Image 1 (cartoon, one colour):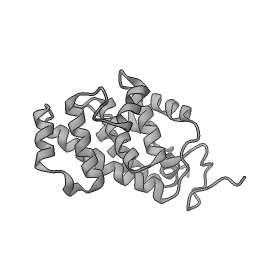
Image 2 (cartoon, helix red, strand yellow):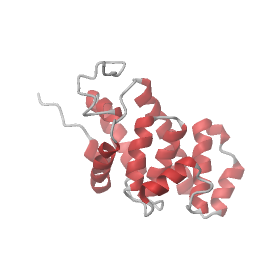
Image 3 (tube, one colour):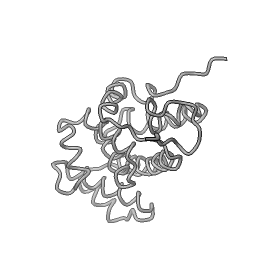
Length: 192
């Protein structure tokens, strides 16, 4: 059986560096800013927990049907949320019935609207989030996480990268991300 490969030659073993990791290694010039953005949105201190922010990323990636990003960010969320992978699976299946706060449900509604079209974020959705306790910064960051993950998902899928074959790959990387943030995913500097 022939192994599928990305639409372009990344010059790597894609089974070892699936999804965005192979793309980051291919173009370190863009990897730095992309990792910095992911780090600012998902790892740096924020009133939303890291697990909740990863859950927003996983949810949007699921709506976009991006297998790699949904799987990796689900693992990153599970590693940081008390309900682990069971909770993440419930949220991805149906956030409205999942055992999460009303605030997070409202933020996920906003994220889903962004995934469809940013203009679908209505005053009513924002007011629901505020009534549930969300701050302006949390609403801002939810919109930016959702928008950024639409970009990341399209980057990964637009170049036809492989998704990780084994969810244990995601769990191993999750431990690095939890400990050190997205800087841990930065490819090594080229040796001249």
